[in-house]
Image 1 (spheres, rainbow, N blue to C red):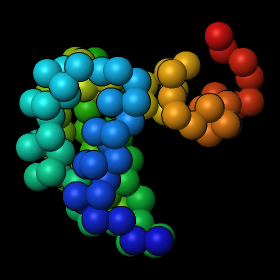
Image 2 (spheres, helix red, strand yellow):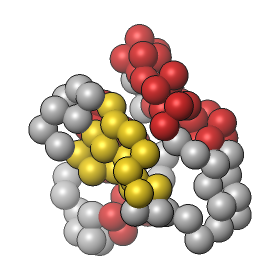
Image 3 (cartoon, rainbow, N blue to C red):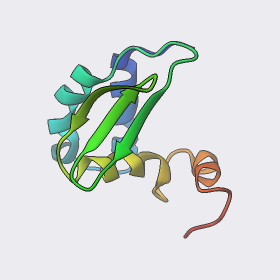
Image 4 (cartoon, one colour):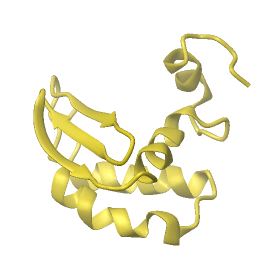
Length: 101
């Protein structure tokens, strides 16, 4: 299924809200993500490489941009890997089915 970058941004914000992340903690990333993230079509890949001081995004294996700080990556990854995720079954799959709590 296709997903617009606007939908992707909204779903990301909804997940942060679900986890109780204060808006001030993520608000500064919304403009950058809107500029970086493309519209996604079936078969496309959007990936993030978390480095020590930045998070780099790739779309279908092509570099598309980065968030240059050491906070965003963990904040974003926690949407799916933190215990408070709205998708606990997906979290278990991403963690290899092992209980890491």
